[in-house]
Image (cartoon, rainbow, N blue to C red; front, side, top):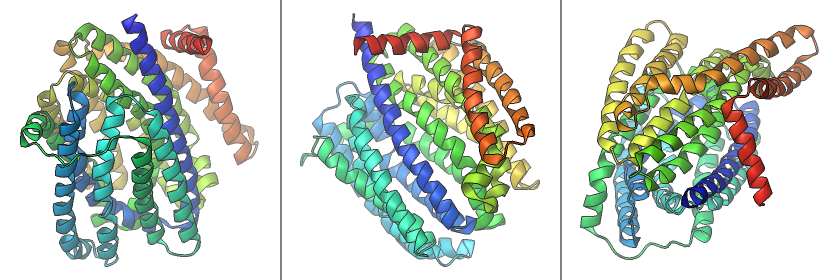
Length: 482
């Protein structure tokens, strides 16, 4: 009975997490299309450079402690309040550092506009500090329904602000206003939907206890964030903001899809796995279900997006963005590996082994930097291919510890996702050939998307894929209960 209740709770929160992610990403997708049609790659490249520094700064403000709050079973009001005040203090120090370093960053890249943009966008650090604690509270209590309202409303309002300013000719400042408005709105909505309020209390002992777990995640996240943005930093310096804008635009579409699907599943799985951390058999079962389910959904979407990439970019973003198509297709292959990456890492975190997590991050980044150093001299497209090769190697590295921790080997994981991969490849080959029917670009894309879904579902049912059967039976069961 307890296992059934946990399953229902996980599925219910997964539904709201999907809805929150889907609604938010859907709104952002439409907004980004409108902005891309109004702005040029150079505008996106400029903001992308600044976002890198903000992302790295946010690691110090948000990372490690928020995950530690979720992982700690008996986290109380003192824990949450202490972490909040520490995060705000850190945000203040980093803001001052960014404010005074802005001229040097702008000089390094030869873009004077970066000074004002960085100083304004860095304000989001303070809102992020507060939001991270609120998000940890929501995840801890598995109340993801509340995130749906904050994220969706914030995305809508900030998107409207961005589009209006872009249409009015504000260029890069339209993107700055969009990001700043988004953080402000998330903070306001969460304040009214999440009833937690910080108390005027701070405990060094509580911080020290959380730090023993969280510092490893903070360092790992810092390494991961810096490494993830290293390619963008290099492209922005060696080439130009326009090329960086194309590179990041190619990454955006698959990133939105995978963040919505796999990210939703894993954000719900962490607290669920943490609750079962003393039962490794249950953790293994839940982790396997996470990998299989994510792969079943992510693989066909990445394959389909790669197939229709060129006409889709031409239709949605106009021909000025066509150079991003190869980046988009490579990114699809890279993000298809995410179900294996994230499920393994979440299981390791849920078991409280942040020490292993840190070692994995260091190992992967050393390998990635070596591959990046080799690929730089061959151009931007080689850098993108290098990231894919790194991702393939990293999927094996992430899975390695769980051979001992959960008795779930990489070979078994690959065997679990192979059926979805084969059917996705078959579906992709079929819908690719629809382009020769000369139906017009719009109609061809619509037919490819619709037929891709129908073909994949038909093949899954015909070959009786275990994941397909599980999903159908689970959905039917939930509908009957409601």
